[in-house]
Length: 302
Image (cartoon, rainbow, N blue to C red; front, side, top):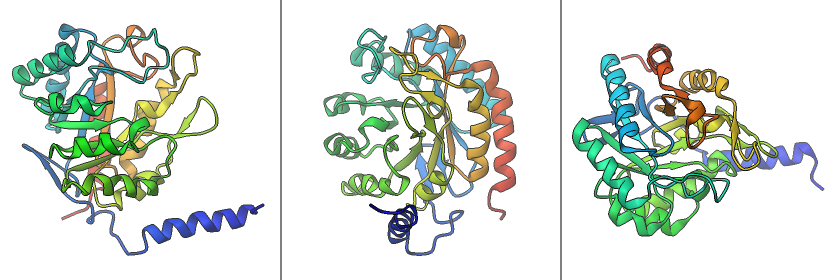
């Protein structure tokens, strides 16, 4: 039976074996270009924002229009996100979305109308040939971050890949995930922190994870809404601590993340997915102003 100190030594030794060379976290991270948007190396924060799931074309378009306006006013880079199929809902009876065909049609329409970049999550490799025609960024969900066939299929499109760190993984374990994507020749990688399992029905955010993952050389995003989930906390649905979203978002920016992932809704209590953790859209303007101010303080000076 290992003592606490022996176990701590093993963990630390594993960490320093993975990252045994010197990094400057402010300069090592690659700069990524996605069409007219650039990420990393002290550039302005990017925001990936939108509803958890497509509830209707009208509601999705309305949120996208409001978000685009907010971010344009602040001159902040913005990527619209929405899920066409939430295949990982707690209950079989939970709303999953409009499905692949209708969902991608809606996202393509919003992209054309508003000229915004689009991100959505993919749960099976069979969807990838279809979604890659519309999505600017393909997202791999946290629960699927070790599914090699899915990751390779997504990476082979040449599209940017946003891959969420599983709640069950240490941040340094994302090195192997990154290597799967890079094996296809795709270097367009975003790594997203969305909390770590802490016992049953609970997640915690270890801000060290942002620093550690950024040392892999790719921009790091903090998912401020899913990180406050209480998975399965309500039995058939997940609970959450919405009041922790803004404090944790501020902490993540102060730690040095390159962007924020935020799920929003105009009436959170009536949201069809993750009602406990979506942020009221009215809170976005003040929040992005706060986060931009923090980022300007800590970013590398020319």
